[in-house]
Length: 135
Ligand code: SF4
Ligand code: SF4
Image (cartoon, rainbow, N blue to C red; front, side, top):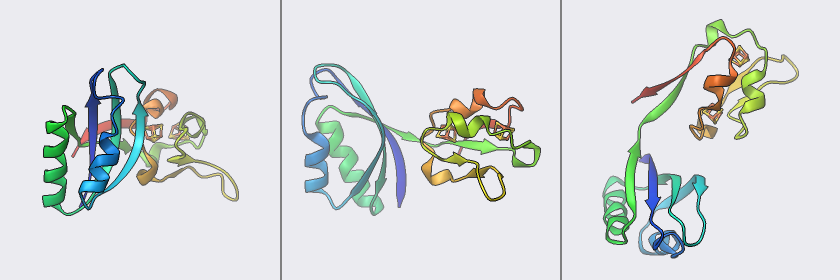
């Protein structure tokens, strides 16, 4: 199964190799989508965990024991594609390339697997076609 989590690190845990230890201890694949970390400062990381449910549960227990906070991310971007005027504004804002527009048809393409939930498209679209929804 795949699940996205927001991990919270304190000033004392941010510079420890906790993610490295996690991958070594458990049979789990971690895709780091976004991270705001700096030594000695509190930080956060958005990451997708891929593993059987039991392994993910163990990994979350391990993180808790290390003092890392975890929150399941169930938000997703909803796109009302039928009202799109293909202006390209959202694609310019979307630095993760979830939204792209270009040749040959110059039609907006949305690849949800690349979305990092930065929400920049919500304000970039003049038609207000993007919203956030909970699973
Ligand atoms: S939320 Fe961010 S990454 Fe996702 S589609 Fe919108 S701009 Fe792109
Ligand atoms: S900004 Fe809105 S109208 Fe323009 S291409 Fe993106 S979704 Fe379509």
